[in-house]
Length: 201
Image 1 (cartoon, rainbow, N blue to C red):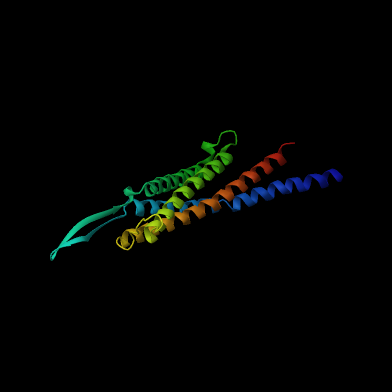
Image 2: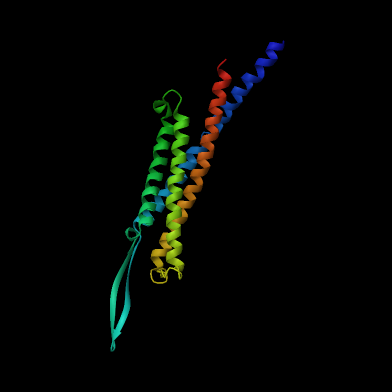
């Protein structure tokens, strides 16, 4: 009687974790799809962001001297880094979706949950760095810095700045989704260890 009382909670605990894991299998793929589209849209919008504008720089007599300037994301290293990390982040989520649906073929000695959690954490760090760097440069372009005598450009290249702001917003949405995915991945790894420790005598 006593031995049966000790065995039942253990088996019930394993079954409960397994059922919970199966019922939540759709959460991470759904979040990954949303993160993929958010990061991909951020990449494309920033990579295609370009605006030409003709400005009057001087006037000789009654003749205005005009110059045509072009604002591109390539002109700012922070925006180039932003495009690279968001592209790699969207690729990471696409690969993790493939691993999720073909996970049995990629599992090696049960290391798949740990590898996914580590890669998710690295992805969060990269996207966070790129989004933060781009946000800093965006704020500088919008407001300038009178102390360093850096002039703002968003009053002249408004469309360029608006599209850049949209790309940054999409990137931060993708980053938020990736943080949630990372938390779930770590929790899944913890549950995986609990299941294995309860099965092993």
